[in-house]
Length: 219
Image 1 (spheres, rainbow, N blue to C red):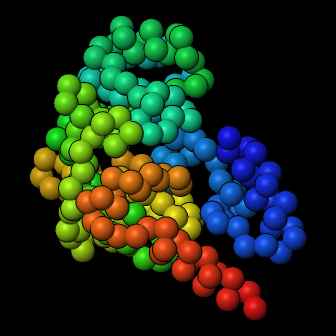
Image 2 (cartoon, helix red, strand yellow):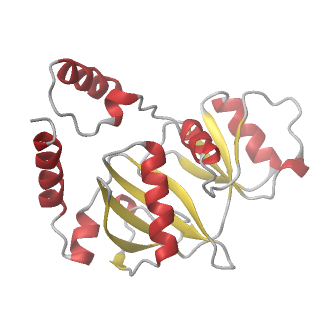
């Protein structure tokens, strides 16, 4: 529960303790809409996103179907589905008004999970889309393999990491048909079991070293 985590983080921060992730103290908002707005304000390429509270003025020409429908606080691929038509989207809005966002759907066979700690990119893995699905979350059964980041992909991932203000993040990067990279989302609590298996990188050790560096800077 993010609210409980934030309460504890603020308690520790008031007592001059090191809190990781610092975003829990500095203004973390667990919202896909907030995330999309952060990307827009930092000129980071991201699928077009709509927050729709009402069925009024919903027109077919606004969207290229299918579109992605997400619960506003969805994570790890849960609460994410496709709407294939305006009628399906209307049903989603009618059932979940004020609690969902709608995003442009970009067909992909895989995405790239980039793991960032502090100001470092530890590495990246390719996450293959789950068979019969459009999602690529390891928690849903996606397979992973080592991926060599291009300088452009690395720069984009770091920009998203910094824009969100996280200490530790998993930045998911996709590519348009012409190869242009874009950020799908940035996760504040990334799972790294699949990442470690594919890269042989000891993520926990890097996080411990980062925490020690944060502590040393306060002395």
